[in-house]
Image: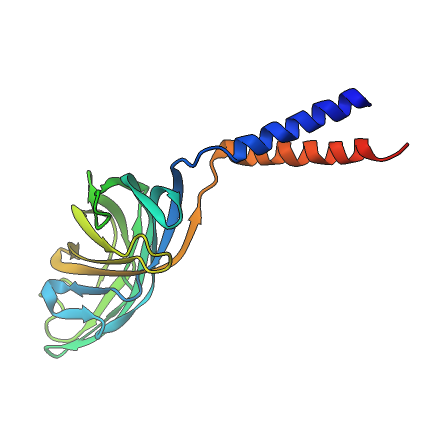
Length: 226
């Protein structure tokens, strides 16, 4: 019995020491709400909003840092970006409606600058287009409408500005990128506000924690009088 107590107690102490070790960089997931964004499409003749609205838009930026309020320069991932809008425009005698969407494929990597104010991406972000643009009126043929929005597109994110990254709940993204919908140029003005920030558990951390809990439970059982 004494041997069991000694072994369990030693294991618990070792695990506590491991968790209390020196601070090191850990992945931090910052989720953004991009519903304040806007899209210019069809050569700029449709602007959403006001010619419609952004129904939903979000994405997650993975940075590293010693704590939630202490992000560090270095590798960054942008993932899970998605945007869905509705279009309701009347222009040049045409009524244009639709439900365009953008969905990120995979993740795109970059690097957070030492000033913590810019993410420089090494590759474009790949997005899948979805939805439909409908049209009734005299100029629909010129605009090649109606049309289904399909296929993929590469958005050159280049250097994305970011503000207040060290302030929990205050991170802010404001950037504009060229985009093409149905063969006509436009732009995507991304405006993102932080909605959550959490530490991403590393795979071995959960296992260590489970082992510690099991050892502690065994230690308590062993201490019960027989």
